[in-house]
Length: 327
Length: 251
Ligand SMILES: Cc1cc2nc3c(=O)[nH]c(=O)nc-3n(C[C@@H](O)[C@H](O)[C@H](O)COP(=O)(O)OP(=O)(O)OC[C@H]3O[C@@H](n4cnc5c(N)ncnc54)[C@H](O)[C@@H]3O)c2cc1C
Ligand SMILES: Cc1cc2nc3c(=O)[nH]c(=O)nc-3n(C[C@H](O)[C@H](O)[C@H](O)COP(=O)(O)OP(=O)(O)OC[C@H]3O[C@@H](n4cnc5c(N)ncnc54)[C@H](O)[C@@H]3O)c2cc1C
Image (cartoon, each protein chain N blue to C red):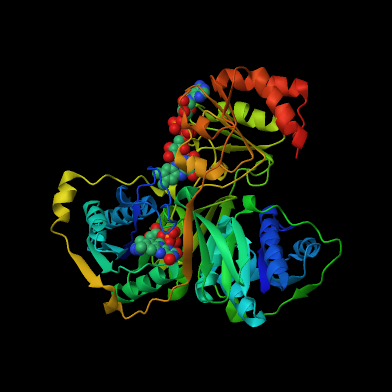
């Protein structure tokens, strides 16, 4: 099977979630036979291409029209390259970037798409894909009909691919200018600069819920514990809605879906929509004043009590014990 | 202005959802059905735009599915949709076919804007809006948290992994909604009464002249369960100890 992986990047290097999509693709290629190629899209992306080439051969489409991620030109570039090169499987990470662009490309390629793949298996030459439904309560095993097949891959379900030890080739593609047509215009990105790692990339995630009354308390307790453990800060939707935490921090069915080594839930009740985002974490710790809170049902370790008392004590004791969980 | 809002009927996901014992589907007989929460947000936004314009603009709710769908479309009408269309179809649908059928409705109705949920909370596919935009070759803005109407254009704030992104698009366009766009209203008693008199067209799927082309074959469903240690700790010291042994050792 000829496989292409759409590389998501920050302008310099490939993002971790794309390395998980690459790992998925390499595993399919190993079972089905075939090869795996990166597709890097953007403007002035030489360093991204160099980074990607440590893992697999790279195709690059570099154009000023791809400076900002707008679905229309990006999708058309992807579907054009897939058709021209005869790729049979297209994979990308399950990020907002890919969820915007890849389905649009998929429809231009015939509509055989599965979202958020968490497991795969080759059975009698057919690629069976597990996709979560109902916020993860149920998993559906599906087979896509038609070619090419298009998938997004949940980063937390596949360990990142490792560099192959050699430097692969980089090929720049020139496409017809009509492919880059775009009717929309990009007016900017407002992001809170976050010194901590993203929840999707950290080994330890500390999340806060409605127990925290304001942004200062959230930063002091949730941010403070995240820093003590070298991890990321996350939150429930309740705090995002209240304007206490920025929306990029939201974990859950409609936020980010993660599976870090350790997930610590501080003052989060454990609504199904929140659990959908973190229940596959390796170890789950819950601190909640309500001994009946549903979060305890999915926790490995539970501690009943007031987060305003427990968190500072935990931070202080972790710092004096130097529990090494750094990235 | 004409706004089309595709609305999906989904089981209320606050309930416990499990696969049937034979894995052929999801045990849904006991489940109440609701309008997909993201579609309720899309409807609310459409109704607000029309209320603000105060002219003969309309919001048209569309549902594709079994005959029962009309209940959720009545809810959409009670929330303020001007009229509704139910495409009756008892065959399984995947996002490709939903988008192909919606395209036919768009070609008939010629809306200026299609507003719809970013994902349905049952299948969580997050595909249909983007598929529809591609099939129509219209610009798209997914995951909207703010929509501003300009002359012949819209400005949309989008929720992305890296912050809020702003796009400006010419109309017609497809916009998919995120949770923070608005808080949908509950249907009032007056709304429910009015809804009874609003037009609700039922179209048999055959009338749209689209042969379904399955793209996603579901082999089986299974319930996801993970076993947890569930240990209750008594003190912060115990927690520090666990983190050190259990977790620090893996570092
Ligand atoms: C009996 C039965 C069998 C099924 N079999 C399959 C199957 O084999 N394969 C499969 O993939 N799915 C199957 N489904 C689910 C299928 O009907 C889903 O609606 C479809 O896959 C769309 O996925 P989604 O809703 O997650 O799309 P999303 O892309 O998450 O939905 C986004 C938006 O699209 C709109 N939308 C989606 N569906 C509809 C609709 N029906 N009417 C109006 N608007 C809509 C809504 O605005 C929604 O917010 C089956 C359902 C039933 C009832
Ligand atoms: C369509 C839809 C999608 C959704 N998507 C998401 C999503 O992606 N992510 C998400 O998180 N939610 C999501 N939600 C919302 C979800 O249903 C819950 O409302 C939300 O997760 C609740 O957040 P919470 O646990 O912080 O707040 P609450 O449910 O209010 O819980 C607060 C908890 O803190 C405890 N507490 C209070 N004070 C203290 C204290 N001093 N010390 C210790 N404990 C304390 C309480 O006992 C309680 O258990 C979604 C909802 C819908 C309808």
